[in-house]
Image 1 (cartoon, one colour):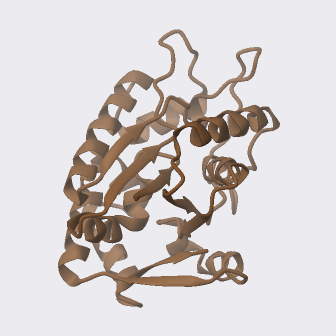
Image 2: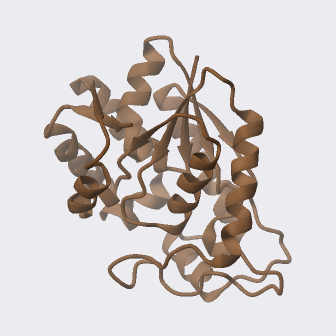
Image 3: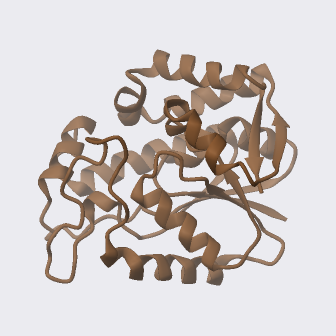
Length: 246
């Protein structure tokens, strides 16, 4: 049996479930993290103002430099929690274009209360991801998918694709969005059952160290590594567990 964590971006699964992933790996469970939007755009692809702005926040100049940096961070994070990462070639929303070469997402995703919904041109992407998942999943796999708290378009796309497969799913609360929008967690899980997976103090520390590997993201998402550790500890302290929903 494999546990497959679906991660829209190069950080989501470990941000949300790093303590549980480490606990499972240390107890002999085969853990894979499938990073869906981890493809490197063509060098000839034009960057939107949004992509340039996001890269500036991460301290990079090109898409290739950005993805190589983030892939290195993710490999280190996965190593710390004992998971095997797998990388798919779908592009992050900031790099996606329509058939005419126009960027699909041009505005700051978090300028409003919630990001814009997935672009209609991404309907085909949902089907392609679903097909890739179906071709790679085995009958006994346990799939863990984002709940889509925060409504990031890439998270929504991954969830829709996973649900198309018809494979039984477990859902994780998306961090850091679950910290910012607890009301969405209650709303999205109202009709779901929850399973608690206790996380020890030592496993929490490994979780924090794994997230610390995402150096480019910690300032953007939390304000810094220490703030990240405080936020994850506070989230953990409520139940000292990770909850998955089904």
